[in-house]
Length: 109
Length: 115
Image (cartoon, each protein chain N blue to C red):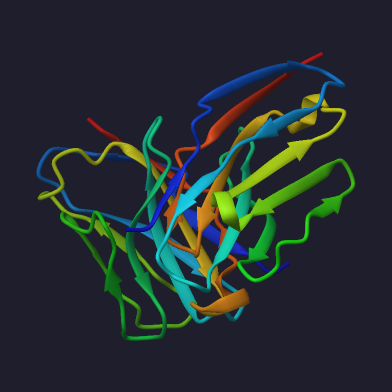
């Protein structure tokens, strides 16, 4: 079965704190892609990152970083020095069809 | 600007009525998708289409129908058989359905409410 679990339903942090959003997935496929999307209050999902299952290198993009560990089937997302504009719902997805239930992040000024 | 448009932003349905949600893309993408989003449940796949005149059921296709007569358009009809249609509906497209072509680009969504 293909499944994505985001156990953190809601997280609140104070501005400038670091925050990590967890994502655990299940799949029997040997090759697959993982994704993170951001859904701001406007509702439209925005693509953040795509990771191939063969590439376990961590990725950093500005204040965002992603830690992919195939051994633990996890693809965690860290925001460093959070800002109010980071407040949104974040979804992890396995291939293009299987989304987690999302983590709602609130950054308090 | 390239992107995906969905209309209307809000849609009201009466009991027993069929309603159609519009989705148009000008990204020249082959694949298009419809998702339903309910509070606390994330996105669930209703239908997807890899090419024109072809579409596949997702996990929750019952009570919904689609067509793909043009590459740019993928309308979703919510039929009277869908007993709980109140939700936020998101349309997406991608270049393809495998590998790095799976990255999806989403429209702004349509919120469907039952009167």
